[in-house]
Image (cartoon, helix red, strand yellow):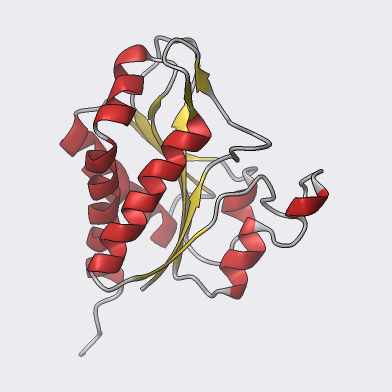
Length: 191
């Protein structure tokens, strides 16, 4: 299986959400966990393309980012699935894990559920569910099942610490979610 991983945001141009108390940026958390997910998926024989950029679909205002857009690269690479990794933020009190999809039904929803279940069961985060968000570029401009995983709330101090201290546990849970999905959709049909 070919997995396109997109750690959210960009270290130079769009750090995403920030936990000022810990000096923790969403782009750095996503990059760290994304690199670990890539390693775990490659260890089980999957092909993985990892790309972090503020240029999701040719909308970047930074000319040096115009060489490639995340969604176009995923489509050209013919990925089987697309996973964008993020940290949520709200009011400092909200917490939990949620996974976003273009629309309910089909393979993207199944992928979202397998990843969501692995994270919430393994790390004990609140299951905020799988939610439709068709306006998100990475969900509507990709030609394969696509999910955006909001791993935890970076502005909720206990979860921010969890994102740092248990980064490897998050990565393994996400990788297991992908292998759970693969077991359902990628096995050969001998009927």
